[in-house]
Length: 87
Image (tube, rainbow, N blue to C red; front, side, top):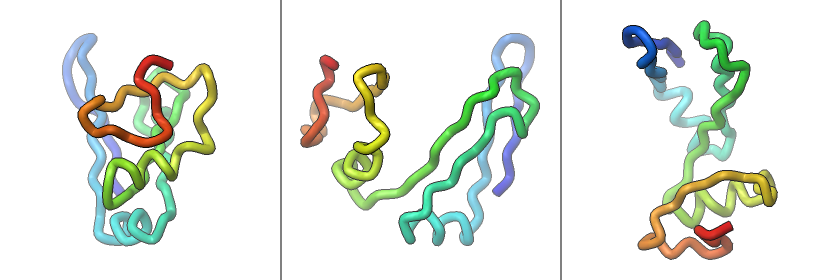
């Protein structure tokens, strides 16, 4: 995986290059954790990358991480079971 930031001024974006090995890991159910501090951002947070065949599969995989404080946005047209857009 290649991780980098790009942009100018206050607008900086994160770029992630995913290699076949990374794709195989994701398909095998092994999430990838990206630490933003590794690419020089002032944010000491992380991004969790994971894979699912459907949006419902994605929701089922992250359900254990959700708390009442979790902020999540899912298009209501997807009708994901176990998710309430109003929480």
